[in-house]
Image (cartoon, rainbow, N blue to C red):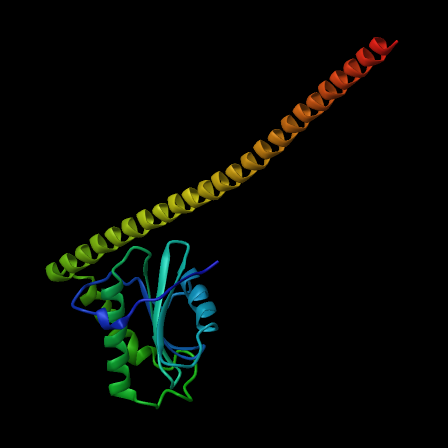
Length: 225
């Protein structure tokens, strides 16, 4: 299962990234890659290429602890890089952008009819050199990455707190609704009991009146006799 991620390219800076595998492709056709020994990375990358639509965009897939980031354009050119899942987003997309610009500057649209591996001899060296360059530490890049990660943690904490507050508010609303329902039911029961008690007193009063009337009637009958 792939985890879909999106990263805005406009955040690219001088941040570095350790790229373990990279390729240049025309749609699903891999024109150049480095390293080009057969490995599970090639298989996963090939599967991802089959999912990429022919339009200008940038995305990333995460699979088994590795992140496969890519940028694509309308011509069908795709540049992909595999890094660790926790590697710098900024450095990775900066790497991809440099490879894309270098390839377009040198070959423009001449790659469209090329077959698999047709640019390996010309571009594997480019991929290797840029991978080595971007693997070098950059103090500014590292500081920027740490800052972004710290801001990300703050945003996640705020989002988590907001979600918890919303849950508490929801529970309070539920309790308020339950309290109102309980109050309505209590009033109904109280009214029902009041009517029942009133009826009992009415019955008792009627019985008392009947008894008094009966006694008075008997008294007058006896007196007449």
